[in-house]
Amino acid sequence: MRGVEKVIEKVSWQQAGRVTEPGRYMFRFGWLTVAAKDLAIWERFPEAAFTLVRMMAEGDEREYHLGAFELPSGASALPETSLSSVEH
Image (cartoon, rainbow, N blue to C red; front, side):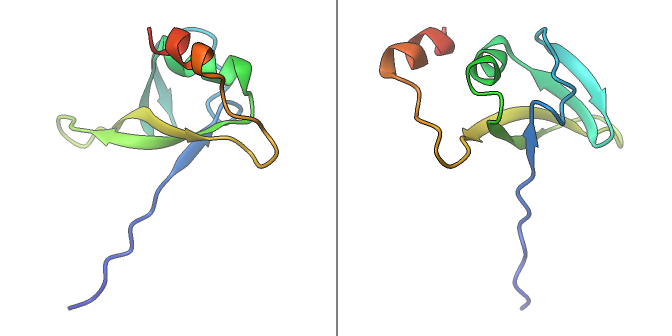
């Protein structure tokens, strides 16, 4: 049995066109839904990269939302109080 290589795709704010409003956007890889809490993280950490999470879609369309994010090396993590305000 062959091993399966799992590719985890990430997207930066720049790659997402520096969107400024929550919503559903068409990109070269498919539809991307950006939530207000995702934008709050990008506004605080413009270099953060989110994991693309594929959602179920009808037909051949590809639908994604943003999952976990990574900060570039050298960036400090969000203070706990900021995380609480981002989640709400």
